[in-house]
Image (cartoon, rainbow, N blue to C red; front, top):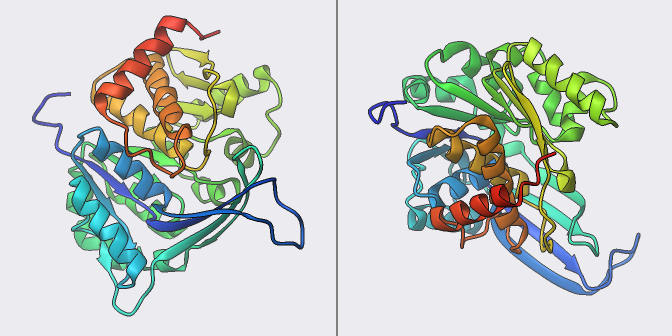
Length: 317
C-alpha cells in the first residue's frame, strides 16, 4: 500500500457508556453483594477507534451520541485523543447508549445488558451523504451493533475500501449471513463462528474446517479468537495457530476490540497474516491487564515490544 493510499481508518459502530460491577467475592443470584463500580466509555466501535488512536493512527469514528453527561464525557475523551468524531450523529434530547456489566470472581463478564436503541439512527438515510467518505477510507471497520440493513447497504454500496468485520456477539453475528462474500477480513470469536456456521466447533479439526468454510464463502482472511487458547487464522494460502501468553487478567471487556485494533495496525504496517495475529494477541494482552475496556497506556512502542516478545517465545503450534 502506498503512502498516498494510507488516508484513514473509518470505524462505524457503537459508543456506549460501560457501567461495570466488580464484586469482592463473586455474584449471588437474587442478592446484592459488596464490590466496586466503574464507569468508563465503551462500545465495540468506540473501543476499536480509541485503541487505533492510541497507536497514532488516523481514525474516524461514525457513531451516535446524545446530549447527556455520558455523551459529553465520550465527546471530550475523543477530543483529548485526537479521535475524529465529526461524521457522527449528535442527537438532541437523547441519552447515550448504556451497557450494564457484572463481573465474576475471575474478572470475566458474568452478564451484560446493552441498551442499543440509539444506534437505530445509523440508517442508510442518515448515512447516505457519508458514502464517499467511507469508500475513500483505507479500511472500514464495521460491527454488528448497527442495524442489519445498514451493514448490508454499506457493504453493497462501497467498492473501494477494505472491510473488516467484528460480529460482536453470537446473537448479533447472524446479521452477517448472506454477505460474507463482501467482507475482506472477519474476526469472530469461537461462539460467534459457531453461530454463523450452525454447529459446535469443539475440536481443532472442526475449527480448521470452519476456517476453510469461511474462506470458501469469499472472505480473504479469517481470524477466530479462542480466548486463552489464542487464535486460529487462515487465508487462501496459509493457516496457523498462535497461543496466547499466560497473563494475570484484570478485565476481559474490550480484549476482543483490542485484538482487532492490533490486527488493523499490523495490516497498516503491511505485516504478513501470522504477524498480524501476533500483533492482535499482543494488543489484547495489553487490554486484559487494565480495569477499563481500553488500556490508556497502550501505544506503538509498548505494542511493538509485546509483539516482539511473543514472537521470540515461539508459542505458535
